[in-house]
Image (cartoon, rainbow, N blue to C red; front, top):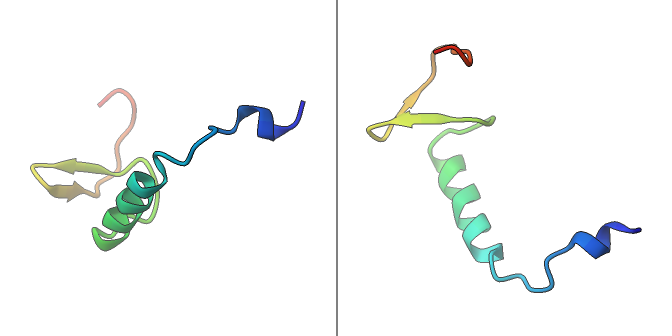
Length: 50
């Protein structure tokens, strides 16, 4: 089975994804997950227990 079988038939979310990508880039996001607290990017190291 090819990957086309799993592709969404429309591109209804393409604009939203592009907007989110642009917003993240403008906010300095260079990897995911990126965490923001009160609109300020949390850049310290963290792990799952935190």
